[in-house]
Image (cartoon, rainbow, N blue to C red):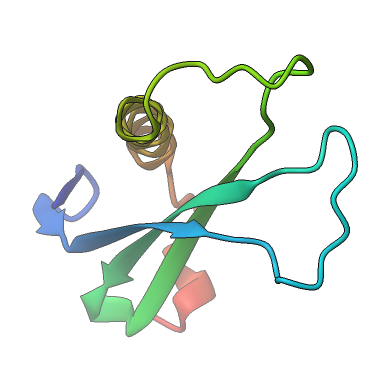
Length: 104
């Protein structure tokens, strides 16, 4: 839920976090991402019958020397936490200045 000071209510919001692998046919070159972390956040404006979708994509590129930053799970948790912070900052700063845009 996101607070809405204009309407003094809570706005429904849903988030999905996923890991996307490149196609099997993708060529492997230096600095090519091995996968992409994705976060989708849907913000529902019920009264306006409208949705906002925020999409964050974080491609993962291994270090040049081939070493890893840590375990895959620890990297994913760290990226997910950072993506959540970014998304919270985006939603906290979201301000609708003209509600008439939604036909109301």
